[in-house]
Image 1 (cartoon, rainbow, N blue to C red):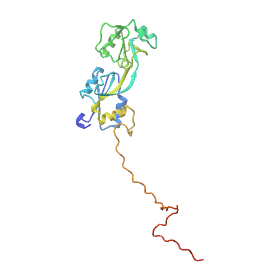
Image 2: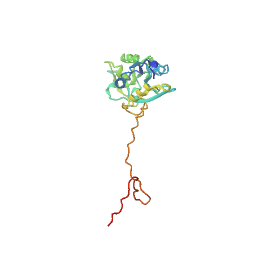
Image 3: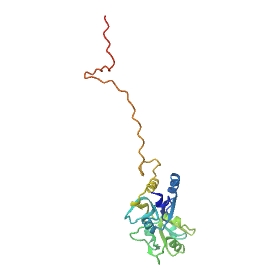
Image 4: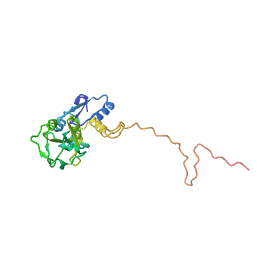
Length: 242
């Protein structure tokens, strides 16, 4: 990547709930001459941002339209149910989807959990965002299912959450345009994968200078009988007279 492409900066997009700090800190340590710019983007917009050149790589929630993109799945998150603190579901440490059958469940338009069949009863409205759904949950109008990181991101004192082990899980991945796999993208992939600075993976390392071959002492040649031949320039010793 040339300086003209991004102004000498690596641009990293991330969706709500993803905390890229640990990877960013490694980048700053390893690449002090290349600033990294973080671009916060709604989950539904990260793919469009990458395709339009608005970022070099990004953390997204799967599934995404993979056409023209390279994807490295990283980790999955537990899905939790967010409820008011006085809700009956708080009596248990974990909640099953069947336990939600009688509750109205909000389904925000930016929902990041892929459902085959949504649990519970449909709420009276579909909030535009998860943040809006959290506000409605706090009012007692319904409950909400989200990845754990989003429950923590939208934490409120009047709400709590419980794990739902049998719910689908949200998976976070590193995504970038395949035809824009630059050296800096390769460097960031190496950081995310936990490669060391001197790892041979990622960028192709420069070929080390060849060391001069060690000179070996030449052994005297042998004739067909297995006896050593006499080196040239040396005379055979004659027999001493008895």
